[in-house]
Length: 319
Image (cartoon, rainbow, N blue to C red; front, side, top):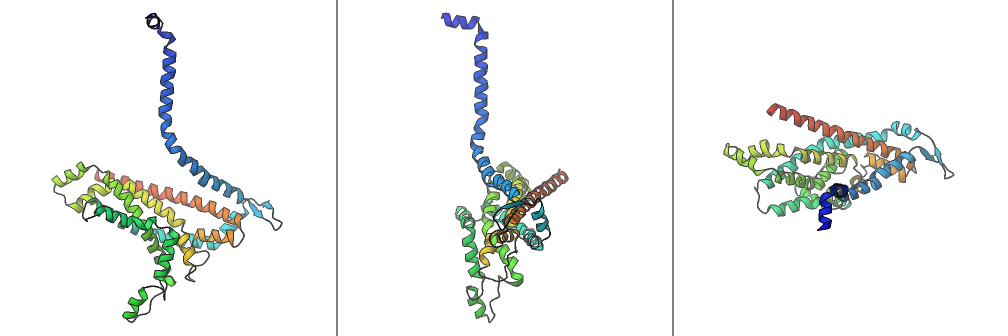
């Protein structure tokens, strides 16, 4: 009782301790999210930022015959910018992405809407079937598709022989880039579909119910109500797909063993890999890797800005 009365008569002595306790509690509460996102940033620094810094360092040197590294400044960058092979491969993957990414996203959105609307039975089974190709390693997928497309090995030989036609070389000539686009679409379609489908599941059902009361049909609701609500997920899928296309490497590297149409500079990453491990030009490859990283970052920013600006303009027109 005496201690309680003393605490009441002298509140100033307990107030600082209470404030410190509340401040510590706020700091602990504010730090909880960083405990969960901290591992991501740690791995990002170790495996993305760190290698980029090291590549920037290596790009300023050249390896001499004596085994020493000699500082050459920006010479590797000048060599890279004067080499047509790197830029030819970059143009090729950009053209591939301009065609393949929108087609893949359109199919992904369509499948996600169909599953979201419940138009097919056994929806969970179909979601799994669509996602399985993404779970298959790219090396396995490239080998599988390679044997499906190469003449004399492909099961398509049987079909073409029955109709009296020779099997076309789908990994040669003008078929090579469409074949690569087909493989990328098969690999990433289910992943993008799942991202968009998950976003559609989070759209409030009240919006759909209101549209139904207004007399809108199922596809009108999907086109005018639900798909506009998941533009963020579509933008995210577009960014991931564009970045993956610019980094194309595994599929052409493995398919090169099955066809002579794939050269060492078909894609930027294939060119840099060849320079580093076959041409013993690791410093030049480091400069190219840094340039490619900057190009990817700029392309991702431009795509994101363009899509957001287009979305804002559509909202302004409808608003």
